Amino acid sequence: MEPDSLSKIRDEIVGCQRCPRLRRWCAHAATVKVARYRDQTYWGRPVPGFGDAKARLMIVGLAPAANGGNRTGRVFTGDPSGDFLFPALHRADFANQGTSAWRDDSLAMRDAYILAAVRCAPPANKPEPSETLACRPYLVREMRLLQPRAFLALGKFALDALVAVLRAEGVVEKKRRFPFGHGLSHDLPLSPVTAETRRIFISYHPSQRNTFTGTLTAPMLDAVLKDIQRFLNRP
Image (cartoon, rainbow, N blue to C red):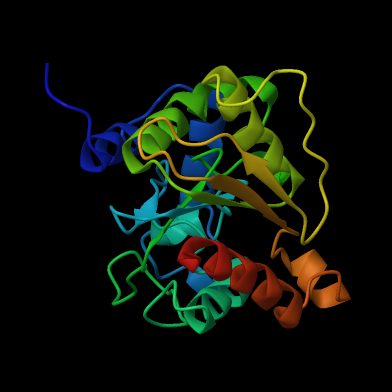
């Protein structure tokens, strides 16, 4: 049997047809374009993860935006959330630049891998539980391959999706609770592969609603990323 790989997972995600409602919505958004992007060819397919194949940090978001990742073909790319997130990742040295415009631009992640819990843009940005569950195997496989030491959950949806995977994998007990709150972190059991400590870090989602209202500011996100850097680089 061919060994699993991030490239194999990527190809399977791009060709995924598990959720008819989401596939219809992505195709609709790619055809009925917003005016400012009417001359662009939308990606219009599920959006795979992106980043360093040796990453110690896995960043988990909600889902691609209809006119963001569904247009550009890369998670958190081409929408206000990415415009807020990638400068912060650049300041923390997890990215080589602070802009992310298109899937084949010069952006490169450093020691970080970023993905969405749901790989297709959902209507009203609200995936159904069955759709989140259908995407779970991809996250499981990426986690097994990367064996990250740190996780960054961007928003409660991402935290819940991540914790569900950790429970399914037997990493944490099903009865254990993981409170949500910006700046909180939760220790995980040692990795059986690397025998290293692991930790979940939490941030509010960098949505336009959160950043415009000041619920999430650049210094707030910088502080979480600094905590992650200290954790990864401690002796």
